[in-house]
Image (tube, rainbow, N blue to C red; front, side, top):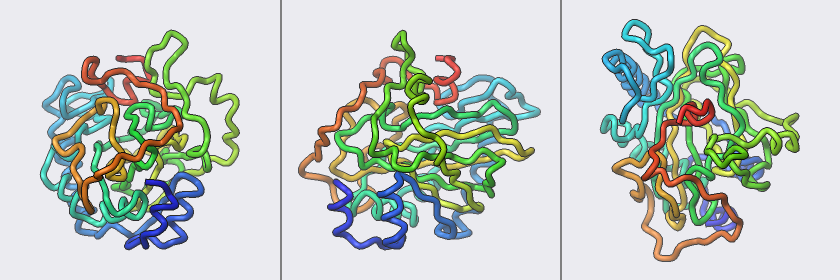
Length: 295
């Protein structure tokens, strides 16, 4: 589904101006949309899983653990396949206002793709280099959007997601090094040609919803505070978008329709997309693993 087609359906949560800002820039940050009771529940679950991670010594199905992880001092970089970790995560993804926001951005028929909860700990360990999302999980069109929810306040010094406006209309870059190894980031030689002077930080208070189009160039800096920055991330697409490679971290709900109806015709965008590794054979760690060549 294209933006012009999506515009024929009135938004139900976002304003017309907010939706147009997303279509123009490729991203959006809006405060005040997530009910307080949901925000409390997401934080409760997040804290419970970080506590559970104390009994784990290595990354696995649920946790991507950082090098500093220990029972005394947990260092969870990512809680994987979030909607499979607890039923309330799936309830939030499918029944809350978040799915309605997705419908405002991708059209009334909405398909769920994947989810995760990323943690940015103080220091340089979770710096994320410039990348686009779609090269890791290509679809037949470019409607997929990642909706994030900051679980705590996220000021500029805490390493918020940073986006380049208009980059969703530009090239889709190769996310491999010169030897062909997947890196999860745009090659430095390609980024040297990109004007980053207009990069925008998606800052906001706890509960802020951020939306990033699958082609938008984005990154995040180091967390310069003494507090962890948790952000829950959920990927949706138009129902007429179909993945043509295995998902890096599939869930039991990948492909479920959460609003509207399944598509009877696929929308095929002619803009080419690089082919990622076959994650079903190789497995997938996380962007932190890929960008540090830990795979």
